[in-house]
Length: 141
Image (cartoon, rainbow, N blue to C red; front, side):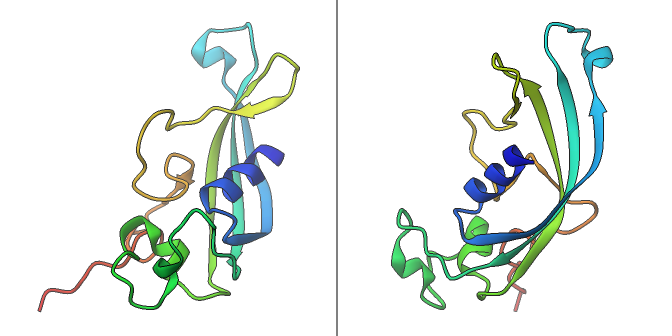
């Protein structure tokens, strides 16, 4: 759970407070991968977060001004919603045991760009990305 809390906090820049985090399923993967030298599991969790008033110092402060042109695409969850916005869903995290025997998340995006926050962890489960993790599509006029 500590690893998942860290992922949510990092991916959402501290802009959200975690209000609920529940483990739904833990599945061992050793037999599927045929590697018995370390533990490997997939954990599925449900989560709920609430947008707080934080404005991360590494992001341009002008971005948070209503209607700013910088606030688009993957920034939806950060500047496209009001304080109090609830963002919830289901995450799937691959965990491996490190040298000290602690569980650590294996990043699905090592050295890659992401389209939206929590990509690779967040299960969309039939949800459209637009209006959930990305700005809603503009209607054609």
